[in-house]
Length: 187
Image 1 (tube, rainbow, N blue to C red):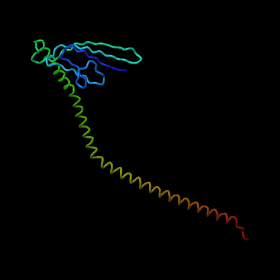
Image 2 (image 1 turned 180 degrees about the horizontal axis):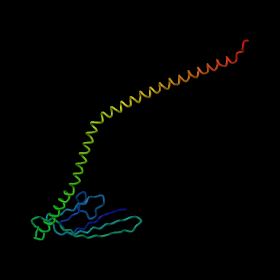
Image 3 (image 1 turned 90 degrees about the horizontal axis):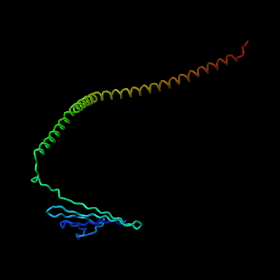
Image 4 (image 1 turned 90 degrees about the vertical axis):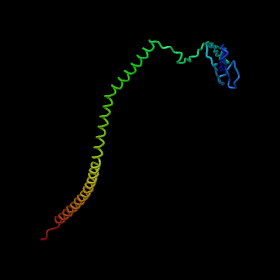
């Protein structure tokens, strides 16, 4: 699909140039378009015509005409009436009142932030003071638990040895008792 843009300028001060700087009637979508205005800005009208063509579609064109006026107004040309001054005063007062209201409504929030920061600071101070002692106590408790575990392990081994020796003593006593009962009386 080929797209093209055709500009027709009715004011001699407006020109269309392609990227080589030559005046052009049809500007392709690949070229740059520059509109140069003369130093004296007046009304100018130009027509924009868009042409689209495709192999399977019939040629479709649309046309738009627009009038453009320069909006360069210098402050020296402005005429401020009393009505304008009153309106500007009203806008300035409304802006000042809105800003004051915003600042006044922000005061409780800022005070709450201040209290939260002070509370956080106190918490950090307490943490800084108490954390080393707490960590030392946790380390000591860990070592004590480790010692207790080793003692319980040793005690368990001693109990196991005691049970084994008791079992041996019971077996030995049982065996001797059987021998005594199996002996024939002399007599």
